[in-house]
Image 1 (cartoon, rainbow, N blue to C red):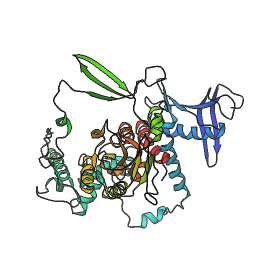
Image 2: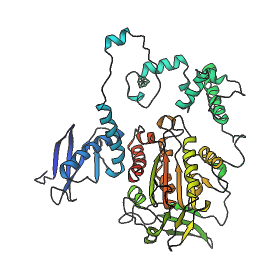
Image 3: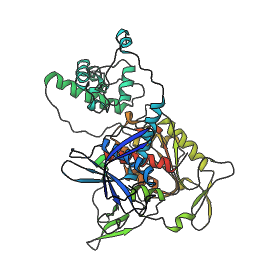
Image 4: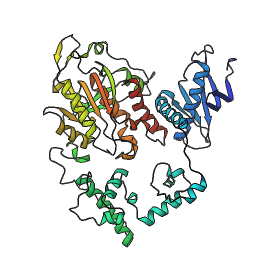
Length: 477
Ligand code: SF4
């Protein structure tokens, strides 16, 4: 490396307690402790696509390389079996990788308490399979699948969550068939009625297929029990087309030289001619770094805005920027009472404080100056019940295009086990970007710390979780 060789094969790094052999290092023009150049890592794989574990491996080598050359590489590459080179921005994965590494080191430093084989054979210990994201790599998989089928285990119900299974089992419902046969008026503690109906209906469909072999397809009709104030859901929420429609767009345009051409834009019709109006938004450093590769800068005027707290009030909160507020909870999927309580407390305290606008005027914070955002309608409804009348609470989609001095974000889900949808929904970079960038002064991210250590399978999932971990690290407690 000191000689500045262009390509280095089988680069070996040792930094206690880690040892790594990177397939290749490639010289790039970014300066480092070595001189006016540095290196980036390339790994070669026979696979056709980049798997999540390749990214962890590359981030690991890049971490070791950073120590050797005194600067973090900007990118890392995988050359796949068909010769294609996939390029990944290291900053998109660093915080996720760092969390993995910290947990690995903590785990390795704990004393191991593994019973001997003889002790295990003589013990009355029995094991029960429970599907998890390791199953697809596990050599016990076939045996576990067979056992779960034989037991008619509740995990066989499509889209059921671990937290639902625990609650059903607590009330004696242990099989798919038992769930299918549950009377219509049954109630299960801590499972909301509409959720229980959906699970029971799904179990009935599957149970029926087991009986007569027929695969049924049903269209989902709107749930009559969804309160009127929530309104329509899904496509039913789309308004009918009208002449004055404006299409709001939030995009980067990667093909223009140097990247982004616009951040926000409006598309509309003027005298029957389509018009596109691009304009820039107020953004903070985090959004620029995490989402736009540091290519955006905030308007100078934005730096003048700040919250003004009374003496001894909200001492843990900064007056500008992003703040991460971890709230420990378990078994929460789309609603978290714990987060709602923290947000209520914050909200009420904020109403006693003031903010300074770009003209230097100091004004009392009111409902107009706070947005409360959650990805889930159920958490939005809970927050609406908890917060005073007039509070602006909604999903991210509702507040697109709006701003407020403070944004309080409630993620609601406890951990990967309780994710009601996929990782891509909750961790959506766009959703987080929109939520945080609504804030003119301060964004507070209230979330369970276990969401930062969620298991990812693909590079895309890692990139998404990395963004949340980045928020947490950029905004120390
Ligand atoms: S397949 Fe492996 S990981 Fe999955 S439940 Fe069975 S033993 Fe556990």
